[in-house]
Image 1 (spheres, rainbow, N blue to C red):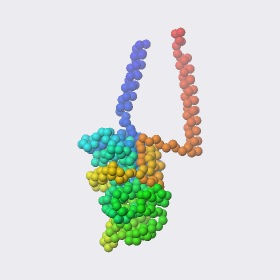
Image 2 (cartoon, rainbow, N blue to C red):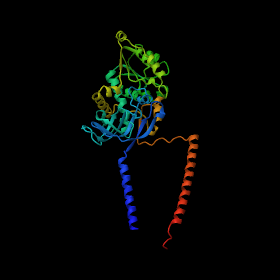
Image 3 (tube, one colour):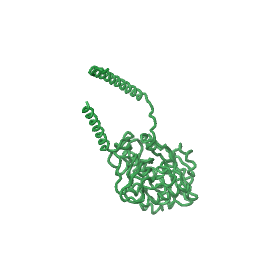
Image 4 (cartoon, rainbow, N blue to C red):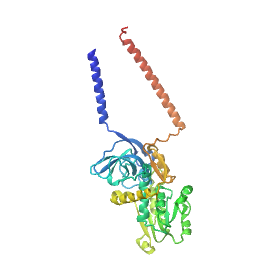
Length: 419
């Protein structure tokens, strides 16, 4: 009997060791927002992925907050240049705490609070990012504010001060005035004396953003005539993130020495999935401007795309300088991010739909630790839940019957009690 007991204990130890080895061998995982294929909202899924490893020159960040941008909608539909092969982790910006640093990283240490601009892979519980795209947060800035500020205010700062060169007593026309970039542009322009700021936004947003602009116009009416009444000679700067027909209108609203700046192409997005018709329509609506026309009319046309500037054209030191200036303006109380709403990873499709429908005022952010919204119970869901419950009850009954039968079998086979 002693030998049998010793054998049982040895077997238990071997099983425990095997379980420990399996746990050690299996990779640890994290939650991430994955695009499984280009198309509609059903292609956005929450999945488990292996934890990233920190490489040379990289920083491993425990993500606490993420930013959502219209570019994410365009990525989902496959409307962006050179996307990675699906499936891949979505997202271009995040904020969090440093959990590891790779070889060669000297100015960032474990425990630092940082924000990062990533080439995808931001919407995950952990992400590894090259240190040149990681920025220490000022004291007192929370992660949601950091994630809501980073990309929007970098874009806005470059548009206002560098590309646009906006100065006192000038007039500026801003499309998508209620969005995250539009709100950032408004705050930055207010740091310049006597700038007249015209915002174009859907009518239902006007009450919420009326204090951010000198005058608000409705995109769904003839805003061109309204602008011409206010400024018969034209405006100094047009900031356009739409493209399509609005590009032609914007250029024709410029005064002599006026600047038209394109920094987005959201007019390409008209439905849940990619539309080649919308793409072609937006392209052909734009007047092809001959350089001689610019010469004759004393106009300028500029373009700005942060992603290409940062990742393909290598301007990371320039962008870092802009981030430092933005964070300093935040510390001095000159700017404050406007957050529309914050969502759990599981609710990203709903958040993305809100952004797609242009219903947000300010920035949409994500919080990996946030609990998802409870799902609404529909009749179909209730019936399905009832079926599942019945199946589960039947399974439990069958299992109990089998257990009882096994117990009776064991009792009959057991030796008589010593008592």
